[in-house]
Length: 69
Image (cartoon, rainbow, N blue to C red):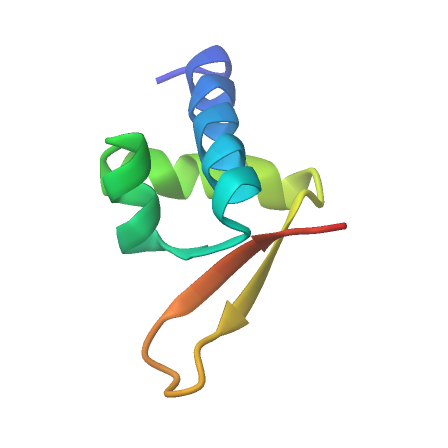
């Protein structure tokens, strides 16, 4: 795993969020076909660049991810 690879994963996640507007990790996994650890690395990358926001679902069971505007 290197920064170039993580950047590619971040692009896949960003594109999925751009299309759907709001997703949880399970949905991102289904859309991108990435493994959970790859998604976590990509989310860290996007969060560090202030490109995404995290919210709790109403029932507090899931973390929802959206693009930061």
